[in-house]
Length: 135
Image 1 (cartoon, rainbow, N blue to C red):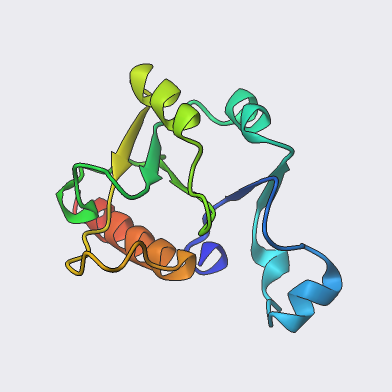
Image 2 (image 1 turned 135 degrees about the vertical axis):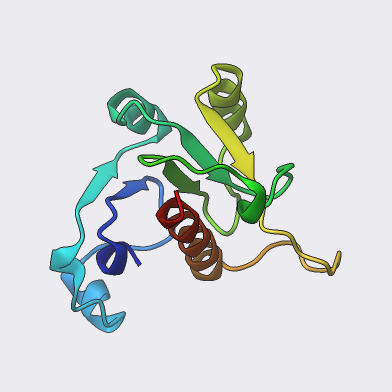
């Protein structure tokens, strides 16, 4: 997705996957060299070095759907791990500072906890880009 849309990718450790040449080859990521990637040791490192832009947390429990949210150029879309999401303390701190918002992809079956990460990224990125192109 990041290669296709020319977006920068920030990865925050710990991650549930490895970024080794072997792992990239196995995943079929032959376009990896076209992705601008930053690797952060932890959330604190990311927060200290991130560009001064709004963070849009794509997470369960938000009050707005992507279609209803007013995306701005330069917004950082932030996705958590499938297993535990974005740390609550990170979200609360950034939202209190008025530097972040929480957006949720609506799901209508209460028995489904969340969508997988790749689907969530696809939906959120497409909606954000489509809305920004209309501005």
